[in-house]
Amino acid sequence: MELELELEFVKARWDKEIAIVTIDRPPVNALNFQTVGEIGQAFAQLAGDPALRAVILTGAGDRAFVAGADIKEFPGLTREAGVDMSRRGQAVLNRIAAFPRPVIAAVNGLCLGGGCELAMACDIRIASDAAKFGQPEVNLGLIPGYGGTQRLARLVGPAVAKELLFTGRVIDAREALAIGLVNTVVPHARLMDACLDLAGTIASKAPVAVRLAKMAINEGLGAGVEEGLEIEARWFGDACATEDMREGVQAFIEKRKPEFTGK
Image (cartoon, rainbow, N blue to C red; front, side, top):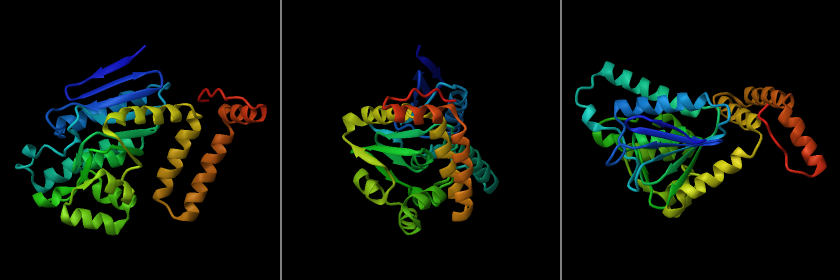
């Protein structure tokens, strides 16, 4: 049975193992305060579904994934309000980054400012060949506030991140692929099919192992190599204690497809 969540600007639907979350705020899915909050609501609800294996996050229409923040909300910002806005947005994007299942960004068009930050909070980014990426906040006298200075540098390296942040330059999907900002680029018409194929592949794997691999990577990125190796050893040990591990090993020995239960 297909389940649905319909908020004013964010919709989610999921059937069995894969959920699709869509930001739907015409004309370009700009992030106002309400939309950011609704994204957080959607992921909070999805986290409670034990059958879920992967999430695809996208924007409605063909024009934009998310074209950025709603600038009309900015004129009244003070230093204190700016700090609060940044922290609230970071909290929602951190929820996506730490979500217990893989999150795939299906980048279907403009992916700028807060939209690029949102995509970077996802685990994997698949881009339409029509997509455009950038952090143009410098053109407004601002810097990214939803994690862009930190995630972009970790994805593409500090030198490339600084060039993009200092200039506000917008790049196409092919350049985004070349610098490591996205995982792959597909024809626009095939974007959702490509994301569903990837989500289906992930859903077929041992769900506890996928979750532990995500946790090991996320935790290890903030640690030194030795601490990261200890984190890996700990989560590897947890994986060894699962029923899925025993099923996966036995299926390999018996040369059959494993039947994982997430236990």
